[in-house]
Image 1 (cartoon, rainbow, N blue to C red):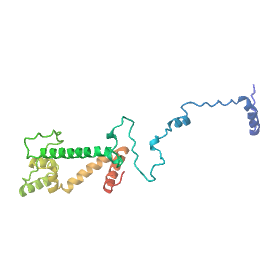
Image 2 (image 1 turned 180 degrees about the vertical axis):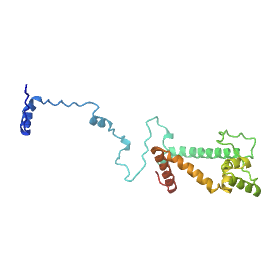
Image 3 (image 1 turned 90 degrees about the horizontal axis):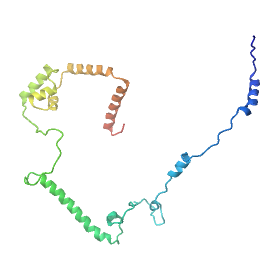
Image 4 (image 1 turned 60 degrees about the vertical axis):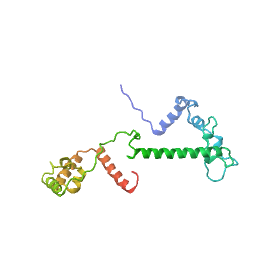
Length: 226
């Protein structure tokens, strides 16, 4: 059985499609509007401001403060003294009360300061939270001989005699050890090589985070934001 392939040109195919379109085309579905449509949602969210915030005929032309307290029972404490007119009767009642409260607060501060001084040991001490670190007093007990010994130990074995180890041995702070002596150049080179080896194993995210941290620190010094 021979099957023949019928080839048609493009104009013929276009004519066939146009003849079949009215039969195959479906009628578009009718559009329905729901309560959740964009227009109705935005319309419901358009809440008008309160009438007290709108400009009126007596409003000043320049910028001014609008005092609009929440709806509650009326009380003289709700209206600050600044917003009361000069001829208002409440000024004569609020002025001495404010002066009395200001003097009471200043006297309480004075009492707190005087109670914290060592001149009144019988006064009750205020309850304070525990310090984050143990309080200590600075010691100035190291002389020239001890300082030279620290420098000698630091230069001879920098891997063993670190700043923390020497500070613990001579009963001083690591900052003081780092001020009076520095590690040799070879030790700096070894530590730098170790750091570069660690950085070589970083991924893209960690490297990007560290670079951003360096940039933020540079912007801190200039007063800019990252």
